Length: 361
Image 1 (cartoon, rainbow, N blue to C red):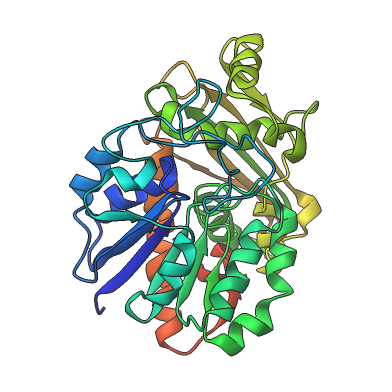
Image 2 (spheres, rainbow, N blue to C red; image 1 turned 45 degrees about the horizontal axis):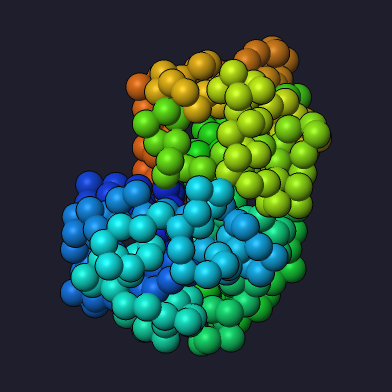
């Protein structure tokens, strides 16, 4: 396979780890990265080590205003760092601008689009606090004349429909959009699609995940905020408005362990669109421990169905407890990115989910 150049939109926990993991993937060269403050672009390849070192501890943890900014959060007020959610200062600038490879920008995404001819794929490592944020970002790439691969690690089921509405437009633009391609949805969606091959009828898919996040909590506060939106007393809008102190209080109220049931995760619609089962037959839940690195429960996929000879059985897939969230999100995301580039180079455009990149049901 030919070499692949890619860009990362958003340099929070997921974006940073994607850059790091890419160094262990064959034929992948990161050539651009941006956040709301600026952008780093080098067609010969970014110095990932320098970028990560310069921006360590320099992450926006969540939105604090009403305007959606480049990385999916909100525009921070003023230039200073605040304990309740401004940008932590490190080096000479804020965010990615702390790197010697980067420069400030009023519209970092547009700069990525303007260099699109040199970028085979773009990983949208953006929080999705507004349902249409990632679809609107896709619109910008279409309008900017980009043709290549867009890939996201979004979680919400309803966003898939918004992308499907754009499928024809993306296809006409020569864009292959791989949606929901992280851990869940993504890795576990693909595992479910593979496990389903034993059956002629699927009756139930149960996905139960466990994440221990102590050492990565600072880099993944945006992810924690998104997960809080799945608690019964919250939604995306209320979670978006929480201050850092609010989040800490919620974590304290749950003794650091948040448990989720019947989450709105896109695994359901992604398995349905691949013909594996009805969305209503898929349930997703999990446990997040932000005070321990050890997983509070083993991540497990159970697919129950009927075989061609009339037997009912359950196929089970488990992730090793020692694999981190970063490994389980970014490894598969970059793998799906490579698969998306192969499809794009073969002239296959439009929206595709992770289950559709597995054996057909």
